[in-house]
Length: 174
Image (cartoon, rainbow, N blue to C red; front, side):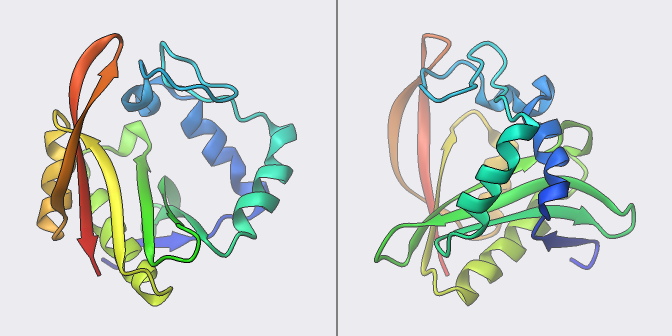
């Protein structure tokens, strides 16, 4: 676990978030959903994050006590390899979470230690339950979640590129 650290980015470091969000391979997991938010590209899953929006995003998110966001830093390479977050519900000890590994670093063992560290951080901040929604066909990601003690608590039918897909709601009690 010493291989990685979770680092809260500085405003000037948002270039990495922009790089991830503009990389089609990294964002491919996000493509094809019928969502309606500014800058979303249905065909690629990419999300526009121009430099002129960094300051407002940073102020809104990084100063929000219910939102935790960190880059995953490979301590040996001295490079960011992804990012991870949780968003606590108001007046509750439950948080939704997310993790994105930059495409060129996928399959290299970053998800599990980063997710483990996120669970530790969430527990420190009084979170009792972390929740994520994961398509059933993302077998590798689900294996990592299950290895760390996440359990399926629900499922629902989603739609991607107009085709039905099963989405699993998973949680971990901290």
